[in-house]
Image: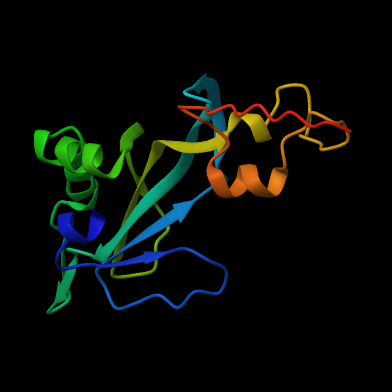
Length: 184
């Protein structure tokens, strides 16, 4: 989504010793995934699990300075790097981004406002803003194989075969019972 938002910038992920591309560029620096909440329920013999998670990240916009030096005169134009990064906040609040995020099952939210980063290299302007991505991981398991009180085991006479249950989805909608009489 940042590539679409900043089409003239290279968008990179931050990692140690990463090579910075030519200006302008955006650096996305993701932090650790944080669990937020989890839910589980059994429906039609299937254990459904939903784990709500959050990934905090920062976006840093790095661009050329608007300061010019000519004939011993320093001409300083107003910095636009903070305003340019502010567009990301407005973008993620838009209906267009909302539709894209719903399609990807994520929500991107802003945490704070863009702030300039001072002491940049000469000729460079930088600003950073904090965001986070909320998403839900959904898994399903067969309830017969995931009892609430521990792992499923086959150590008693009435236990279902774990191998067959794995192959057959562990749930039956219909059952046919045949009675067999043996004379011994």
